[in-house]
Length: 446
Image 1 (cartoon, one colour):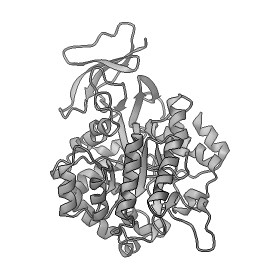
Image 2 (cartoon, rainbow, N blue to C red):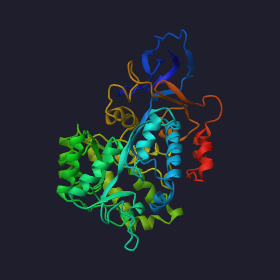
Image 3 (tube, helix red, strand yellow):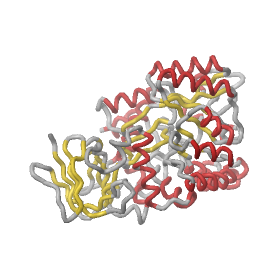
């Protein structure tokens, strides 16, 4: 059994304790010992990685992941990518996440029916590197809502990145179809979205439609996730037991009370990076701050910041991730969310890091195996050059994310030379990696 010893590291173990200097020993897939100096772990027959005082932390969990969003400036561009290239894109992006220290991820909807499932299966089989992944369905949506991209004269289902339903029986059919495909959870779009032309405060689904989704999920033992910006959509999540609440921007006092009363059941992944970067960083793509204000995003950011601060105060679980994969917020820059949690939600840097690690184990439904550096836990470990508690932006720099281990296997080790090519798109500029076709996609996988 392979033994790897990390020595002379500052250990952030994810428990809530301050970092301490020590050693950590991995055997096979699991951590077998964590030692605080002056105690040391045995290095007999072990590969020794001298941390030289660097920061050792648990792997992070991205709680609202769209691998199939393709770093382009429009929703339409997602569906215009053919399925063959789209699958290669997902494989390529999954490696990028692992390169950046995201060892777990929750699929928040695939652009095509089986992309998430096929990717999860390939990662689990060891065919391609990527985070430990829970696969989502396409977004279950309704006529005219987010995910319905059909046109009056072109009513082709393939234009839509959602599964368009109207009425409980269509919801039932869609849910059962995705369950047949092997998803881990079902995603439904319970609110509008400004960029899609439906106000974010709008809740387009009737109560019996949401109840049908919950009934089918319960019947088959699946969890649920929801795009839920409006206050009513957040309440629908609580009423129907939808565990993963995405956004929750406009949650009013009643919605907050409901979430707080059921906080042991629900997770909120607000995707606040989308609001911030669409408001302030998308001018190159035609969304200036003035345009974002007119669309409603600047106002939503202000309201969401206040709502999320209140959620944090009440102990509602808030996790990072959400809608990375657009041109102005490309895949791999996801750790920006942690600084946004500090600036907009009022978390401390330690709380933000806990949201990405310990809470990640909880949303992955493996709190006794993931998200902390403890004996018996799976060895998902990241070594950082510098102290993220002093500078969270280190987690967005591929050169600072120096070693990534998943399941006891070192995936990335650039403690000595240059970081792997898969992460170089982030060096020096916050710009998207442009898709150049199948040849380049294949080249980057090797």
